Image 1 (cartoon, rainbow, N blue to C red):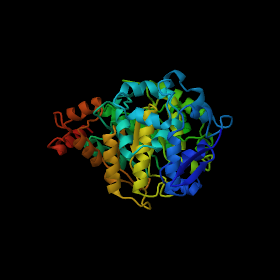
Image 2 (image 1 turned 180 degrees about the vertical axis):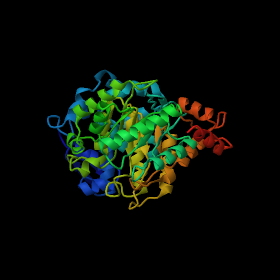
Image 3 (image 1 turned 135 degrees about the vertical axis):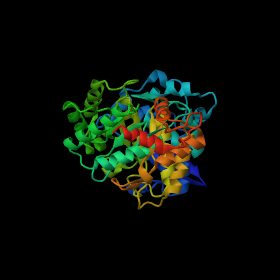
Image 4 (image 1 turned 45 degrees about the vertical axis):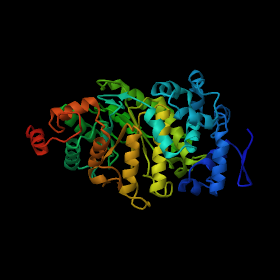
Length: 462
């Protein structure tokens, strides 16, 4: 394919190919600078964005940023593209697509039908020419519902992952965090543990512990141990009561290989999870996590910008119909997203792109201690994603994950967002919270006036 060009302020900027154009049009972030693909000036970035707006969407089907012949993710994207669904926007340029998405005539129903017709590169491209409010408005119109033991993604609701990590996998410490989270209404998306020790024995022990808690209190939620998919498959083979199968994924074959996976292994994990038939209201059994910069950190980005590669990971997730997928947006560090401004922008982009591609998108709204960011930045992103209709967020004691050593959102942060935006937990989980007298009866999200009494009642039966 040919090059692209545009003149800004009397200077003519030329972009070698579609990959170069996408990279130069991307809002500034440190990872792209590290990779040497970012725009060198604001003028160059503006020229790239204007040139990108004039690119027909059909170009993204003809020109691949990662070669079809050498990358199974590219083959997945092209081979599963729904040409019938694409017809609704096939006549548009990237700029025209933006205007179409913002139109009042483009409803949730229209976007749901369109999703199979979009490729990640199309979606990444349009995000690069959108303001933050555009990303919020369109994502809010996207409605993606997934189910296992409860229903996630319904309008007016927001779920949370209760993340009771412990630096030594101490069961008492984990149990204390679980009780704390439940008393704030957290845990409807999943009770999910990142194990400190990734051995099959430890994974089996943690799976059985969570299963016992969920069964003992008849909690309408699901558990997950965030271990490698092959370890989960082995646990299933040994009879472990696995609910969700987890795996971190990326947007290129080489990056996924660095995680020790490929599409075949993910398919095996998906089928293993389905075989247990543990869902009560649905059979979405996969949980995926992603993050901008993962492919670059593995030197597997093929010279492309990190946001476009991140969006390609959503094609991998889409194949396996997940219950949950979230971008762990600031976890990799300031080498990829330098400060709060870059983290906020990346979180809004990832959520928008995932939802537009038809995924039940969440976000781990987070940063590392050496990033130029703080909890105020996270409050901004948390609130904006709540307005944008995010499916779920994280809930961690005190916002501080003492095992993974990063800062994220707390149990109280989820309660705050539900209160100010009038959001509720998953309906099945909300009913359980009220039955346990953790939440008060009524339309508003309120803790019961005597939470300690609910706590005493919960532990009295032990």
